[in-house]
Image (tube, rainbow, N blue to C red):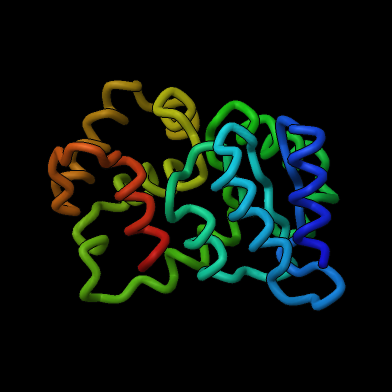
Length: 183
């Protein structure tokens, strides 16, 4: 089974980054995703980039469920855009998150009208969108052409609107992203 081969190879070589496909032979089901989850569980310091032919929200949610650091979910057609692919690798290797823009777009479009995310202004949604892609506050500020303190204010407002209080042991940023991805 490919999962065992991949996990064994990671155990032997301890790479900085693992790139895998969601669906791998011989079953072409979710062996690659299961291997990625196992690698993240056993070696949390190894970054994992999962490739997929299609947007599968449940896979993205599973991948981000425990923690969002050092993980990416990118559509295979993005690999042909070498600069985007290398950017995703750099971000996850640095401990950030890399989500394909199409994954984020589809997750946004699935938001229902009763969703607490509907309380957010368009600018707050933009900030949360960039957070979900794994960008730092400084990178978000640069992309949105605002100050870093403006981004921090937006993020605190997002936390308030999503009822994310300071909870010991949980990152409000990760909880906001998970709520965003799960909607």
